[in-house]
Image 1 (cartoon, helix red, strand yellow):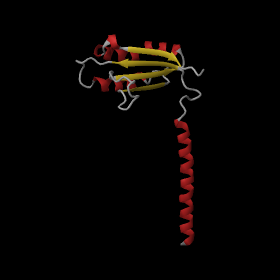
Image 2 (spheres, one colour):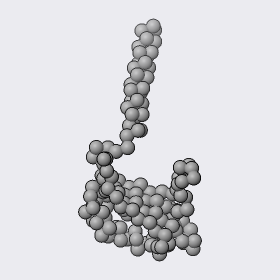
Image 3 (cartoon, rainbow, N blue to C red):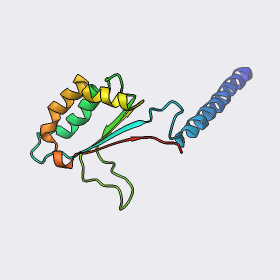
Image 4 (cartoon, rainbow, N blue to C red):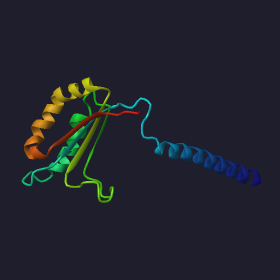
Length: 145
């Protein structure tokens, strides 16, 4: 009985040590902003949805970005969503409905994306519900120095 108790206690102790080691590794990753092989070409789009857009248009923009845009071969990473509830005080704008961030390896990746039939389908489906004069597009290359 004593052996079983010590064995179980040892297993629990080992589990705690392993868990703490993994937790430290995960915590160490939180502060890292750029992986060594991260795609450096950034395409950011800010959408303002028209007031008379169909109900659910914002959700459709987000869903369709994941379903239509993410699978395009040149897309390395995609982020899309509504403005954050908690953001930089007195600076961050919240007067938009959807933000989209797409990462590529290079400008050719962006060109492939823009000309891809899935991107064209996304634009055709949603552009009539977007305030074109407020559409903001930013392309830049991540620089380390």
